[in-house]
Length: 124
Image (cartoon, rainbow, N blue to C red; front, side, top):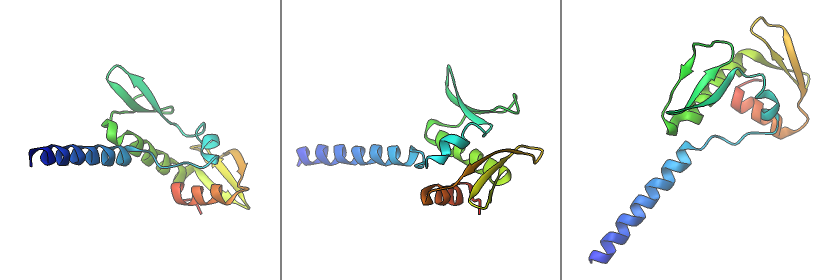
């Protein structure tokens, strides 16, 4: 009976660890994300205590979420930025700056990119 108890505890902790790992993983990204990443003002910065989220446009902005929430918080900031600064026009994704002037334009040639922009950034 005792050896089954240790086996059950071991399996329980392993399942908890796998569940925590799966919840902390970022969502999968499409190829267009790597092009858009350079226009997003948010980035992760290493510091002595771990990682924090910074903003290129606001030097005072520093958010230090827990490790399990880091990628989710960064994605939330990027989604908020994308809703305000991205627009689809005739199969092209247009990037705007804070003043509303066009900064860049990318062709959305694959369905994967179109679906990603629609679902991740909420741009139609």
